[in-house]
Length: 233
Image 1 (spheres, helix red, strand yellow):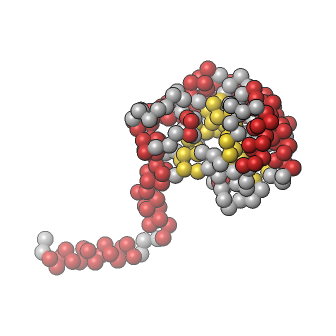
Image 2 (image 1 turned 30 degrees about the vertical axis):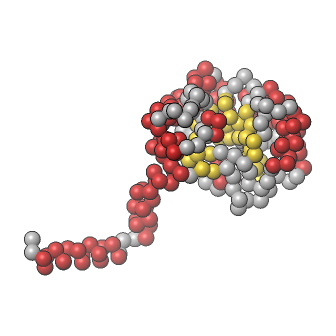
Image 3 (image 1 turned 90 degrees about the vertical axis):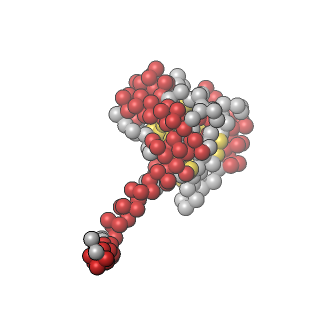
């Protein structure tokens, strides 16, 4: 092919790019950058909203989950539950109760036994295994992933990118697995702010303190939403 023909082809391609619809060009760009976005995106709240918070619960289902669901129902509150795959396999009916009650679900790994020694491939396999267990039990695919223990490193980011998850953390840690009821209330009331994601678990202490947490935050003027509502997608 001579030089003149090559120049004609290049000019034609340039003109075609100029007249591509804006939406098409944007779609191509997003498809090429999806892995990059998801592998680094780590969210703990939303600075742009006022007087809204999201209650989140880790390590579910547990024997205390039905009681947590009852409390949330009494206050007409929707929350986000992060499910552990092996626990879902043990108690699929509780996982279904969470979804049936209108709450949002997230992925919290299958094994909940992660360490810095795990490879990115092993972590991705664990995430996918949890997703499969959750889908079989509930018919839903989780929107977000919360690493066990909040562990975030390059391998976790890569694993989340490969499996299509954004990393969902928190701004307020109730530490309900460690503190007593009074200390939990003090911690949440001190650290809460507009747009915060609040971390709880499904424990006996959680059940005892949750109604007062809700009452206190309502008194402060906060409304309760799911994570996706808080983040506005």
